[in-house]
Image (cartoon, rainbow, N blue to C red; front, side):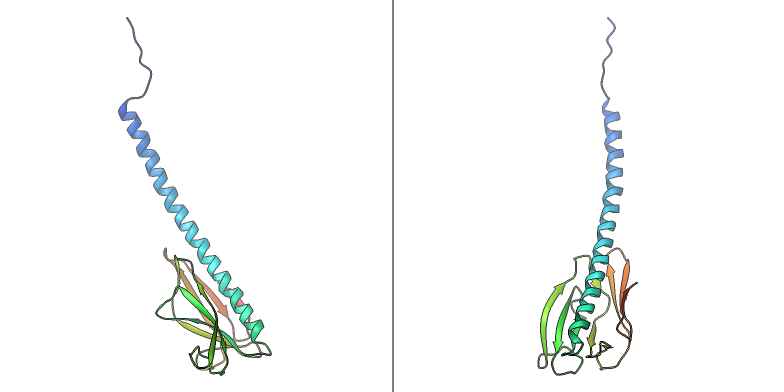
Length: 156
């Protein structure tokens, strides 16, 4: 009586499960990095669009600005600078909206950018010049949203 038993041994099944587990680990890690990079690019694009909107609203009207607080770098505030002091304060500024950045993205430094009536960016001391908003995601990648002294906006 010659019997051949078809099937897999327990050892073979364990090896296949181990290989699948290793492949899943690397694919999930790759996917999380990819998703985080996409959220970083999306946040940079949103801030660049917001700066363009601020510039459009400021030309010939009341200056508008963007504010990123040192204490909470996962959000930014768009404000109208009614008292023309180039800062967001309780007395002379009116908050238009608060926008939260994605969970994996934060700004690396607090910053205030106000755009004057000619479309030129001003810093917190009302000085004319280039401003940079640096965004960083949890895996260490960075993007910079730059508004130069002439009001041109670019992402690096």
